[in-house]
Image 1: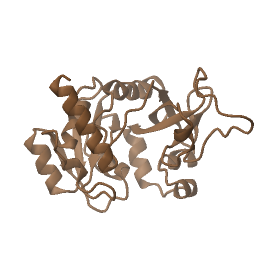
Image 2: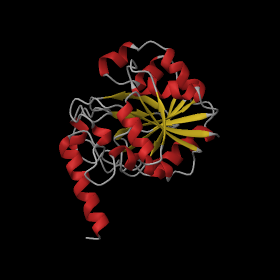
Image 3: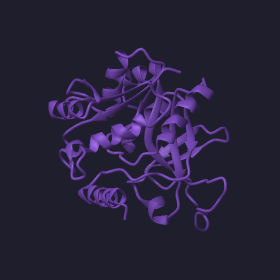
Length: 251
């Protein structure tokens, strides 16, 4: 499949304004994500999609490809869909601009899932939940799948809910899965999604992927060993900087 990786990036962020342009490591945060994406074997293009001229100029400075989009998009998926319209590709991988530690092998897995399962509209990733804290947190999105590896539901609530006793996080295959917010769409699927009104379940949970399930679409879920931490808060970024400096200094 002809595949492009699109990285939506915006300047405004409630918890960490100007996040893509943070550069305590000597590189913009968006540059770290872009370089990770370049390591994937599946894509012929990596593109940053933004409505902010400052981000576009920064991407240009490190030699990345960027496309300016409208400023009125309600979600990153809408921004990705605008870019998808202009691309001659079969599939689009939506990689968030705050994932500097994302494993490129996961991006290749997403592309492979779409290729191997042509009846599915979307592919995404999940990782085993290993702690009660993660299982209970509404900030950690959970997914349950059928026996074919398709998503049944996504929720901020603990699912599946254990009625008696405690969840077995050591089960193999894993039953309790953390959803990772990265997607591969067929081009037609992402364009259709952007044209579709939000589903009531999506509005309640504040989870855009429920628009796909709510309107009878299918989402293939690939399970990887572990999730990589994104950068959502100042503390997350400081931890990333500290780890990056330790790694690059050889300590």
